[in-house]
Length: 331
Image: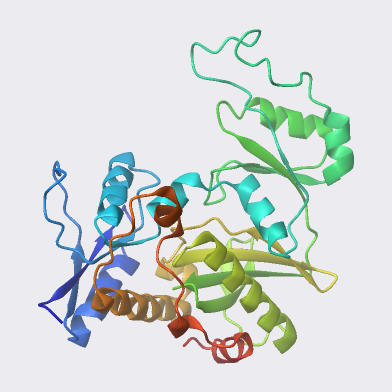
């Protein structure tokens, strides 16, 4: 190993997970240190001191996203892949799930309600069919249905609609957001999986009505747990995400992938609870240290390699049933 390896972290206002993650790495004394990334006005040839960068905020700070794509091309391991993160949306996500044999709610993409100045409805939007067949849409997804921002997260701009009138009302308020409408899954059990390193999956009992986690190691049968762990792993590997959360609504013993485009998942201690928070800190540290010690590997400068990110190697080839049985208290 040539010198000390460094892990950097880009953050916003979150206060609990970032310092705990940094402290966890630094206390291990394994030739890897962690710190907050500091950026001024970087140039193309400016050395980048970090071997791995964990991105928690570039979806809200576009300057960071531009720099992260530059860093990835220079061989820095960026979590998560900034090229894929830029490209994802919930309509694509539902398509990806179904293409991988994973059930997703029926999903419909809606044209934007409003557009940037300069768009003339009679000239610029000639490819759109108008008016929309709202009745046909409701026949497809059913009622109630869920209207949500295709690029959103954190439960922002999400509406459960019980009538066509309610759906159109919320759509009319959506501005320039791209919205999707989804079938509402009346679930018997709801699960949120914390996914780290494309391998480590922690299923947690979650109540979206209360917006809170419940500590329980036995709320799922072993068969259902194994199925959710395996399918969560399939999704994060398809996306190339090393840090994500995947939400599952279980209806009639069938898990539906509700939301899995969360590349900066909620790691706050008050949300996760101390038990699951500690797991997220330790497991993320494990993955980042391993990547840092592997060193930098600049991808070929073409789309196929940039979007693929790092490859899933044999070191992640743990049998699904083994991983599912070792997760309950966090491993």
